[in-house]
Image (cartoon, rainbow, N blue to C red):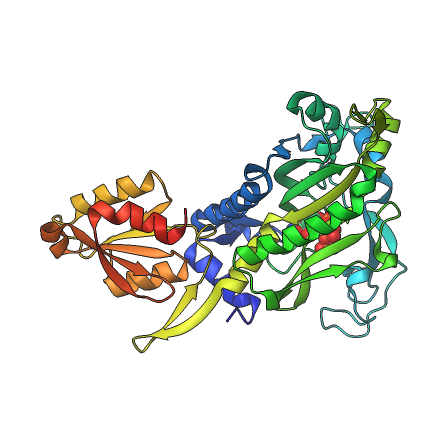
Length: 435
Ligand code: ATP
């Protein structure tokens, strides 16, 4: 099962401390969200799972962390100043604004019928601000609308310092900003968000091969982290959706409660970006292949994913309700790598006699994992709480533990319990978690 509607996840996120509306004590700040104690752990886990697959486990990808603020010249070269816009329409009846390509019919999507729309005009999505004490021409800077340009402008730096050669990739994870006309659907579309992007540089003749490779790899990433195949699809862009330089683009889509929505775009960008930056900067951005004595501008394959959207998809797919011992429970069947806590240590009672041993187990396990420690309320309620936040394993310390040096491991998905010697606990959890 998965969540049937978005509210199930929105409520759980608020109730358990995953995601709060931003600046809530001031009434909330327009489609912005703050990640609470559990949400910030989970968002970090999403990014770490991406980094593990895309950087750590490959010898052909390196990581960078580029600046968020950038000069106009960079965005002139990339085409963002001229083209990074959505078609904006105003309704003269309800006075709202909409993205033209998001309006299904000419009726107002907010249920007010009889809307009259103005012709669409291009609305640039970049946030502009000013650097230094004087606002005005010459001081404008832009907040990046994607992390990608940081990789292109550092192509030569990375090539020289990392000793990589095509095919190789530069990866980056970080915040991007877009002045979206209609943010919404919780953390699906917000004005600031985190991206996980790879620019993979290849010899031009290998563009198609690597594009197909990355489409398959990226689908596997989502599947391996627990999204069922029935909720995942890859959709090739139609010819009229493609940017002029693209030799192919596909979206990885997830079945959200409101329909299919993009999690990631994978694009074959040819040599467009490097060529543009080379022209505008006057710097050479190419590669000399000593083996073939050839100089060429590499083609780029770009898998570009969003961390927040992906986190929403993992939460929706993991959400489940079942009945255990005649009691209904909510359980997040999250992949252990994504779960905020991997283990919860629960002394059966708050009595002083159990705390020292339970604390000692917490200290040992927390060297390796993010571990929760909870000693208040009845044990059944504590299990329910851990189920609801997706903790794969609970470790219960009871009075027998003081005698037999054993504890009980309880598994989230099956609720099965097994007694294990404390001496074997770390190894047993490692075996079960897989890391
Ligand atoms: P959309 O069509 O939904 O506006 P896009 O095609 O413009 O998205 P890309 O430019 O391909 O998006 O960005 C790559 C990824 O970054 C998206 O697949 C998405 O996961 C994420 N992303 C883009 N815009 C937002 C946003 N406003 N809020 C959250 N995530 C976003």
